Each structure stands twice: as C-alpha cells, then as structure tokens.
Image (cartoon, rainbow, N blue to C red):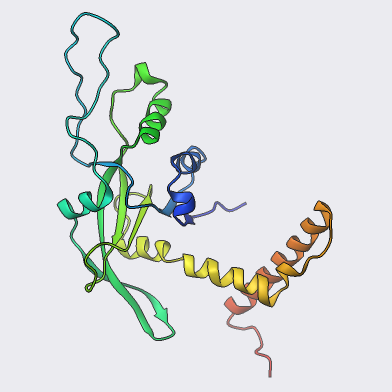
Amino acid sequence: MDRVPVIVADAGYGRSVGFRQALEERGLSYVVAVEAKEAVQPEAAEPYRPPYGGLGPPTRPCYRASHQTLPDAVEATALFEEVTWRQGSKGLMTSRFAVLRVRPAGKLARAAAQEQAGGRGRWDGVLPLRTLLVEQSEDEAAPSGYWMTNLPATTPIADLVRFAKMRWRIEHDYRELKHGLGLDHFEGRTWRGWHHHVTLVTAAQAFLTLRRLNPKAPTPA
C-alpha cells in the first residue's frame, strides 16, 4: 500500500500535541493548522541547566526566556512573500505567507519531548524544531492563519501553502458525499448497515474522482 504523503487537518486536530506526536511516531508527515496561543521558543533558543545548590533533586534544563505565542514569534522574525496556490472561481488565490522555524514549548510539548528522549532524567532540554507557516494578507493587521509542519526545512513555501490550503478540497468532498452521493440518507439502526452505507458512498466518490482525473474519460452529452 502506498504511503500517505502528507496529513492535513484544521486546528481542531492540529492544536493537539498528542495528535501531532502520534503522526510522527508513525512516520507520517503533516501540515496542520494551529492556534495563535500555541507556545513556542525561537529557533536559536538553547536550554541551560541551573547550578546545583547541593540540596534536593538535581536541577533540570530550562530556557532562560519565557515562551512566546505565535503572533509574538512572527512579529520578531517573519518575512512575508506573496504566494499563489490555485485558480479560484474569481481568479487566482493569492496571499502573503512567511515561514519560520520554531520549537513548540507548551507543557504538553515539553512532556512529549521528554517521553521521546526516554524520560525526564535523560532529556537534555532541547525542544524539537518544527516549521511554522503564517498567512497575513496585505490589508490585515495581524496573521489570519498558522500551520505547523514536520516536513523538511527545505520544503518550498509554495508546497507548504498548497498543503495548508487543501482544506477547501476536504470541504468540497464532504459536500459531494453528503449532497451528491447520499452520505446522510442512511436510515438504518445497525453499525453494520452504517458501515456498508459509508463504504459504498466512499467508493462511489472515489470512482467519480478518478473519472474526473482521467483526461480520456468520455464526457456525457
């Protein structure tokens, strides 16, 4: 079976550190929306270990500066450029985007880093680097969207934007499943019946998608 190239999701999933960690544990790449309140450290931030005073447990590595929210991180370092990602019904879809490297730094992110290191005692305090994609159009005073990804830092910004904006495709497919193929027409009362219904609707949608992608498919008169 072919590997899923990139997982995309809205902030309902993307804000979950556990969700992102589970994707990484499975070797999956992702571009997921996150909320502005996400806590991060800048790329250059390095942990240090406070001197041990001789009493109590050994000191743990920490960062000298408090973490930032995403708007603060963007204001400090982001450089925006114009990117066009697709042709819309009213013309080209274009906006301004910036890419910066950050270290997710909230409580759950730190716990995940400790777990990946084999426990709190083995963790050197270094938070993993991730890429943050930010959207802010010319007429906006603040960013309108944030996406976190574990794709390589060399990934072109145009590719990141294309993945981030793929949500419109998900919404389109859901409307087609629901209104065109009867996803919401099931009136049975059993799990097996629901499973069969969803499977057939999904297969029908996949068939239609393949037909649309086939340039040699005959066009109905």
